[in-house]
Image (cartoon, rainbow, N blue to C red):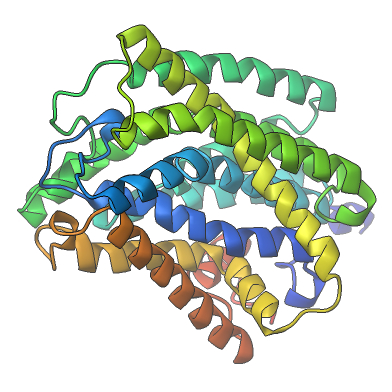
Length: 389
């Protein structure tokens, strides 16, 4: 009987058991994800540095500088660190044994399946599949020491610098160099392109590897679970990480906004590598900053915080909701706004879409319902119809 009890897997965590900081971080993070994803829908004009469209309007160029500096290559490392943090929490909650590993492997495989469907039908830049692969790898890292995790994270940054620098070091020809489906007018032809584009996506977000390893380390130490106890570390990470992200992202941002032109491919390689590496620091800095915000909020959760937390608790549904809205508004075979808007306009729509998702998630919270995607994933993962309210 004792052996049987040791293999029992608990159900999904209830809302009242959840910790503030990770959910608040996910809710806010989705605003950055919306902005980061929206700009790839712009088409119908020449493409420049990092495949940003060449724009003449000063407002569009300035907004482009801000988003490339503070969002591009910074949002997904934050998402990755939070994903790893949540994965470790699931592992610990379910006993950190063989049954928990089986659960995480099943969840990871379903995430890959979700990612494939999402990529083929909506958004080939999908990140869910990559996180599913990361989840499978994390299961194999459960016995790895904290020190080795951090060393591996640091070493992986060298790979990120080399690959990302090389990927963006050639001067732009004005043609789109990836994600061709976004400017394809035939919906069936676009769908046929998306699976291969999805397989290419990891090459553009290699920094998530280091973020996943650091997020695993942070979860083991409960840094966001009890942020007040780790305030000095969070302050240093927020200031240092965001400072590095701003300094490291600005050269590429100025080049993308056509305020400065790199003088050679070596310079372009260098600033692209710097942008990618400091993006990991920025992602971790954002997570730390929101951890500090959670300390300040404490138990005084007003309507805004509750709505943001509701969005964070339904982050998978919110992420997919963004893709649905963007497909309807931006693609050539739908409303085609991607050909008419600039960076400023599409960023405004991205933030409005995020705000709409926050409001919808809060309505679900008020009615005691989870997000639809979370319901499906949990049922597939836990193989049960039982859902905690």
